[in-house]
Amino acid sequence: MATIYRALVGSTKDADQWAVAAYNQAIQTSPNDPTLRVDLGGLFYFAKNYEIAEQLFQQSVILKPDHANGYYNLAKTREQANKLPGAVLAYQQVLRLVDASSDDYITAQKELNDLVDKVNEEQAKIAKQQPTTTPTPASEAEPTPAEPKKVELPKEAKEDVAILDQEPENPQLASESAVLTP
Image 1 (cartoon, helix red, strand yellow):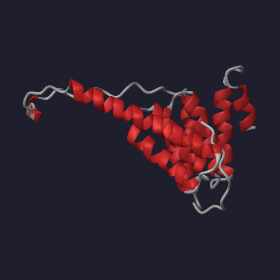
Image 2 (cartoon, one colour):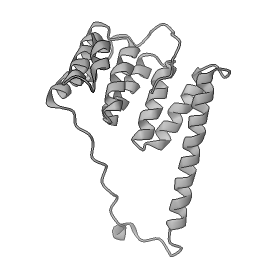
Image 3 (cartoon, one colour):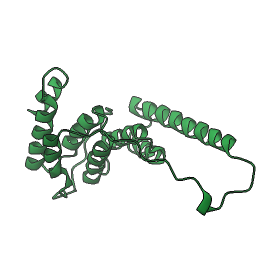
Image 4 (cartoon, helix red, strand yellow):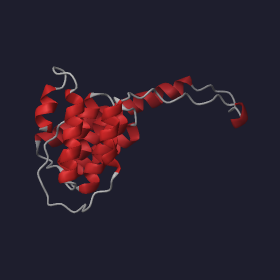
């Protein structure tokens, strides 16, 4: 049912809420399935709710530490949320888990290289903007900017997500092949 509702998101009113509810029900039925969390995380990712998406992808890799797809989605989410060091670490984990001769490896390696280039460019810009004068004491330093505003889900969807805070019953799962999907 969750897959059907997910396919209707964008074309049917409240399909996103139905999909979230169906995934939560599936997670209750099969609490050790990391794929359900990746699929549900994808809904939140596409809704630009990166905080919840990141939590779901983290849960998927806790349940299955060799779940390359979970790490890949975690990397993409952290990248979108501008948590670049965490994104780099997740991409590195993907590269450890997938076959080096696969297309998935090539894709992840390219995305990691692009991300590292982006981080280096940002650091270079910051270094150029730094004044060459003596550093300002901490008491006179400017306050750090506020966090960007997070996208909020409707109340009903938030209630459905509450189940995600529960700990999985058994984090040991059999190995499965990964398919990289953002």
